[in-house]
Image (cartoon, rainbow, N blue to C red; front, side, top):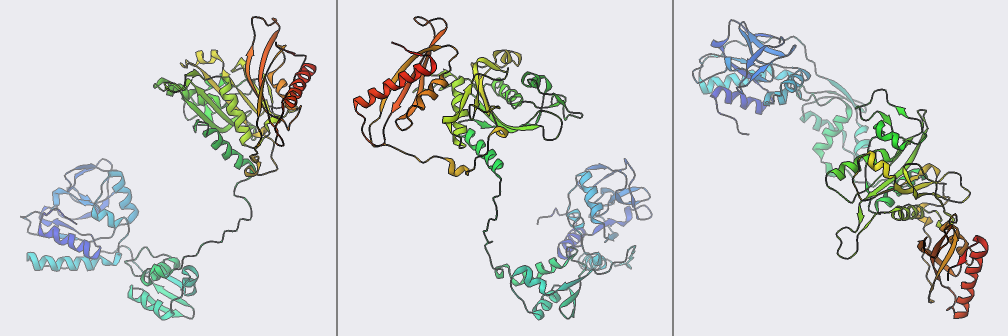
Length: 559
């Protein structure tokens, strides 16, 4: 440790501090006005410290003063007015004990860090006052000359050694290895403890320089420190799981987090409260829940929709020059102020373009089918059967009425488990969101029915066929009220063993199509797992598809 050389006196006090953990302070006795006074400071008193800074004091700080004013802060730092110099002839040597919490409070308020403060705030030996004083006085007399006056020891509190009763069996119980009673006694005696044995218990008197020893576990630590930590055997805990750490709903929560994130969305974590101006746009017919003491004026209501904060932070990113952004959040929305009137929702939004500046693909604006794919795929990954999904064009008013929809786990379900679609253009204008396109989806966890199987068991086994597949395209002219989902359900029910997949690749209205009609084109993959299909088999299934669709939906095959 390097110290700034000032004088031999200061060097000696520093040496004693490092040797005995006993901070001392030397005053130039000739600079003291009449007498030394230990007192509490008064507000706005000032003094210049040995670090050449002037400090303004608060009430009740422990100061050392004389008749003229403050000489220093007790236990922290002395002042320049009474500091020792090369010309100093007479010194007053101070050795004292200060209460740790007082030192800590004062030094923190004044932002002072010294060696003395470091030791006093952690607690030093209160019985080392005379020892430190004697040691320093002898060294000063030996090195600097001079005569030592009589010591003036003032004691306001009587210090007694703390005592602890230590049960010897506690050591083995805690550490797992045994040490002989006689060896324990020798270790503690060598460390300065006064030991008296009574049957299986030790009466210990703690040395005054060990204020950190307050309870039996501290004695265990002292013994094992001397014996060596390598004696403690490392044991692996038993891995017996009585029940799962997370319940089914918690597992689903974290699974949905990972599932949505895997599709390129960045997770956001925002407040459950939001700006009432934005919340009104998304709250629909839900009750607005005012916060009595909001943390800020723009976070004054509990959110009724997950989109309120997502759109706010999307706009912040767009305004900073980011264009193609995908964000999601999973958390609560609130239907009312009564406890329990809330839903857990996964909400996600995408803006901008797909494949912007991509040399390999042509860019395009994000659309409703991107989020429809994401929401359907997320539900399938969570273990729900896509064959039973039912999609309707019903959606909240903050979605575009012609480019949105809702997903039901079954056509008989009352509540949709998800909404998806393009965010209404009027909302983009109100919030001044500047982007080529903005789409989003919401999944309501509370409406997802519980699966009896575990998530890891829900994923279907991969099955493949060794036989060639065949693809057939069909275009049907149907009433505008007929949904593409209806045609998919009709075709998939014809023969589940042969019809492997159905994809819609075109929906057309216009020339050569009656005004109240539309054309829906589907691609059907046909494949058997038992044999190679011959032309006659394919012709048979083609005719069956056409006749079934025409019969059940009133459609006509488009020539």
